[in-house]
Length: 341
Ligand SMILES: [Zn+2]
Image 1 (cartoon, rainbow, N blue to C red):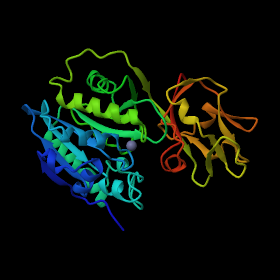
Image 2: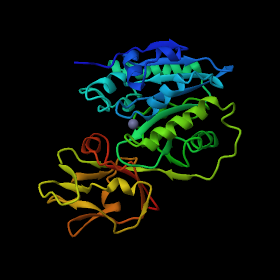
Image 3: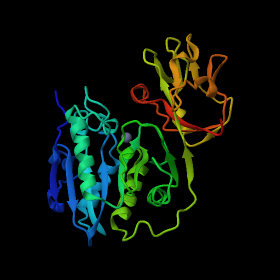
Image 4: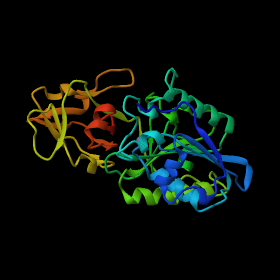
């Protein structure tokens, strides 16, 4: 069985001619996790792009390929880490978030480091600490349709200045999930950018244009932050293990929960109490879980069963709502920020 290696290869200043004809050939040439470095006009500073933590989220990889292929000299040294190369290359191509039998790589950045995948995560953190970049961007796509947005663990000026190069939406998380962005040391801002859906051409265009600007602009932090939509303290709607989840436009009566297969159209919309999100089976709300930071079950504070429908009882903004039952079961159905408690 294929395993993520604990080590990464290093490639300094690759020639555009050595990258291959497209992003797939480029990935095949990397053959595994890889650290690529370009020398900048200013060699005293550096910036980092982390891409493909999830093997089925290619917008950042395509953008990085274009950036390298164009032969640019970045404003500062530029370090690019291409992570889940093995998962992306496992057929069918770009279909695996992570390798079968392994963990979600973006849940591996906490301890213990007892698997090769977790050792690779620790090596990435060490490398970033040694490098001391002025900014780090971690590129993703959403599994459902979504407007682009940034995710940070802090809502401070540096994070906003960095995020606004990509989007005007910033989600500030406070859950400890083992993600890369929780590893922020010192003052270096680090944001995840969700460029949009994994198959959305607009997500590829945004990634290419914004990562080009991130790499070539002389100063990233000389502008006043623009007004942004800030979503604070999001909570996760999760599926209780042992429950059946479907996505459909008609009820599936053998399922515990059937979410509307258009639920991703609600991403970033403010929805009112009484909004239906799907149908509930015989076990009602039992298959759902909303946990507070202290582990308290808050499901009934936000959702009710109303004539067999899963219905909101609070004003909230949804995001990251997926229509992929695998992602929903492994991670969560959606995130939301309630208007007030
Ligand atoms: Zn992702």
